Amino acid sequence: MDIRFEQAEARFEGRTILHPLTLCLFERRIGVIGLNGSGKTTFARMINGLVMPASGRVTVNGFDTAKEGDRVRAIAGFIFQNPQNQIILPILKEDIALGLQSRKLPKQEIAAKVETVLARFGIGHLAERRVHELSGGELQLAALASVLVSEPDILIMDEPTNQLDLKNRSLVERTVERLGETVIVISHDLDLIAGFDRVLLFHEGRLAADGAPAETIGRYREICSP
Image (tube, rainbow, N blue to C red; front, side):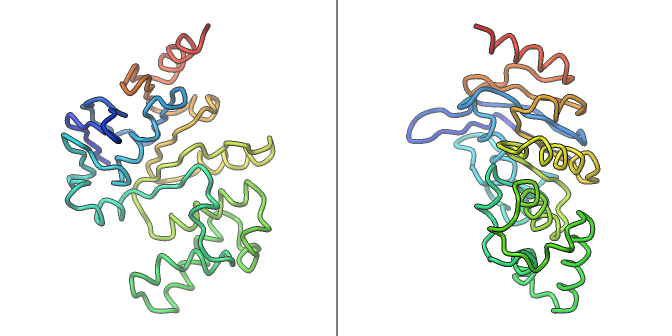
């Protein structure tokens, strides 16, 4: 995994959301923290081309997000803060199959891939369930399955434990720990990212700290202190 920001800046309606940023990411587990409105979600969305740089460039494994967006999004999958927003079809297995159907794969291959990814997350029994019947933790696992069935190398997750009760939060945390893909997690759940390889702290649209979790989380606590 090789993600590079080269003086990449994000602006919206004339306002700078993320100031010019240069850095390289290559670790397997990366956390992203900061206050609301700090630029952390914009940063994460720039990685797979959901937000384009107003200046500078972002590359993922050598592919430019502004020029080769389809190739970038095949590498980097994104799970939104509310996973229900990205689950389109009412039946879980049909929604997971949707992304594969656009690749014109044979029906038998699609069915096999869907079965495999459901089994991977232990939710095969939910295959025929309606999405609105799923718990918060089950929805997160469903969103994971719908993204990872396409086999991206990188998974970006926006607040995966937000508004989950303790049981479902623990379920999602254990699942994230076991993922083999490179994972970038935006989170206010500091326990979730405490064991990661690297943590980035954004504040007022700038990278305020970048390093080991304990060091970066300590700086975050200082910013949050009255």
